[in-house]
Image (cartoon, rainbow, N blue to C red; front, side):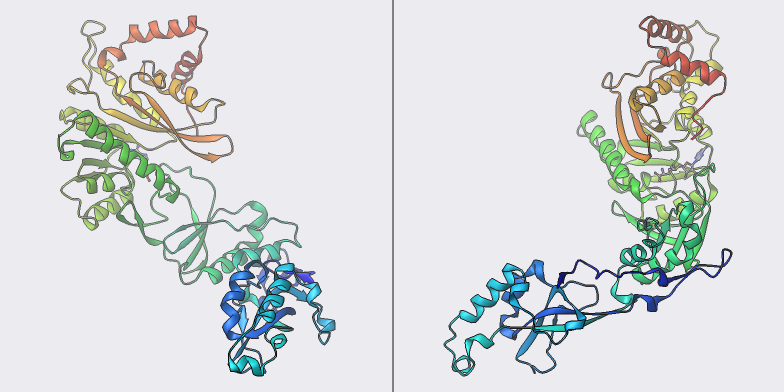
Amino acid sequence: MSPIGTIPARSDTSDAVSHPDAHEEVSLDPSAFRRTFRVAALRLPAKYCNSAVKQLQPHLLRLRHVKGIVKPEDGGDTHRLLLLATEVNEQHEDTAVELTDLPDDVKTFVHATNAQEDPTPAAEAEPPCSRVSLTTHQVHLDYASFSAEEVLRQVFAPLRLEAPTSFETVDHVAHLNLRDAHLPYKRLIAQVILDKNAPRIRTVVNKLGSIQTQYRTFPLEVLAGESDLNVSVREAGATFRFNFAEVYWNSRLSTEHARLVNAVVAHFHASRPRVPLASCVVWDVFAGVGPFAIPLGLRGCVVHANDLNPRSHHYLVDNIARNKVGAYVTPYNRDGRDFLRERARQHQPVDHIIMNLPATALEFLDTFAAEREETAGEEEGRSRGLFDYLEARPIVHAYCFSKAEDPTAEALARASAILGCVLVNGKNGVSVHRVRDVAPKKEMLCLSFPLPRHCEFNFSRKRAMESEREKEGREDTVDMVQKRSKGVGDGT
Ligand SMILES: C[S@@+](CC[C@H](N)C(=O)[O-])C[C@H]1O[C@@H](n2cnc3c(N)ncnc32)[C@H](O)[C@@H]1O
């Protein structure tokens, strides 16, 4: 006899996969998962089932689609078989199961129950020793008995490959990011995921290549199920509808979306107590389909939400209507720099500026600094900046990636070099939030800082700061300025 884990082990599952030839699809044979085996069982009056289940939890047979309590073939309605996670050698089917072979908890339960005195007349007719007895029961498993993870493990173990069991879901779409070694088995993997997660999952896709496009979308291949990528997702009390192939969406950012929305609201309440939230104005420069903009609108903030991708804009407009935040959220379809300049030229007030395009958002910071060059010509240090009309400094929340040893220092140095001022973590309202690891040694961060005043964008001041930093032996900012002037950016 041997204890059973979640799946009774098969000696060989290589017959589950056929490999007709190198160029044909690899297919799965569900019949290869059929299996019959025998387990130990307690035969007991139905009235003892509840207490037995409570007391013997760790020793009970728990398999997907296999009932743990069954009626004995001979027992009518009065008795049940409680199946135990102890496999009995099929060859010795007729051999009585010995109590000594079973775990101590089971022995104790059988002895204690049978020793109980039962004063009912029915019990008198039935000798105490017959109340709980040991027997065996045959269990049948097939493809339906196993989870996707279990099937894939059984398929890939003989191939000496790790089973690809993790995937992201966006509504009814399961989204895989398969490694090269798994590509010959991509349809098999997708079919198993579809079979085991239906009806919740109706479509399984694989990401082809990494995000390199301007709109941060990636090519997808539908591997199994319907070719329908129109999804509806709930996040932060809002509904977002979009086509998964046409726009950027990442469910892993839901915590970050919520964090920033809460931070914006909390900052506004702290800095302008008793002023209604409808006076809080946010510009979302790279808004996507609205995961910052719409929840902020639902909270009562005024949001100007922009995205260059016409399809993102289309869904943003639709989501604004769907969530009934048209009075709060206004959509734009511009390049981020043009959007910032347009808003500033109209002398529009703003409290927070969100820039979530981590691959290049820091480069857009030159919009705040560069404008002073266009308007320069007055006394140096007094040139007029595009954002000088603002009395209070808006808080910029700029996302970026960093592969550096010290991501916080590197990201701040890069932003400082582009802005022409020094941002120091923890000083003058500057803070850095480390969002998540996007790849080994590649982090996503959010830099939050009050937009520097025009005098801080001054060239001579910038040069002075650079030489100060040089003197201190901290040349990273200068490096970044030089790299930038040579056109070297973060290529991610
Ligand atoms: C990383 S996504 C973030 C979307 C959304 N904020 C979110 O959190 O899911 C960046 C967005 O910036 C948009 N984008 C890319 N380049 C842009 C540009 N030059 N101007 C404005 N939007 C741009 C993309 O279309 C994409 O929707």
